[in-house]
Image (cartoon, rainbow, N blue to C red; front, top):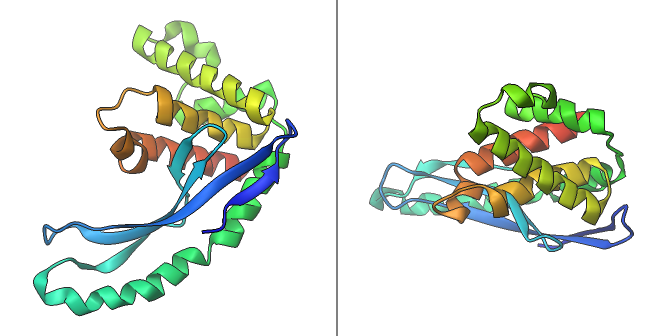
Length: 190
């Protein structure tokens, strides 16, 4: 699909590739689903775009072969969100973020704040430090914006978090949940 492009607050061309993903299982139990996926070229961060996923109402079994044709209609519904996604990304780029905003965001995302840092166990403190470092890195690339904050989380899930299978982690597991929650929180700031 056409990439989303804009000049970020660091005056750099920020390009995000968007693709339509179709996921299915061949076990007779897994429903087919579709979503828009983003892949930001500046940092090689990927995520499923929030509120673009749909579950198609059939399972991949021998008797349901004809239902696959309904994918065209469902794909057009997902693709119709593209302009909205591009506009949201651009709005996030124009929303400046203060340190207090980052702290509130982290509390909502992780369930604890910077003030509680000293009371956290070593593992949680280490995770928070890594997430904060990823946010700082993305602020240096994008500017201290909601876009940079979101990409700080995707940097952590894509490159830093422990995961046996990075792709599964980002698109299906805990990383996907964190990215989706982060998207919801930054979009609520608009």
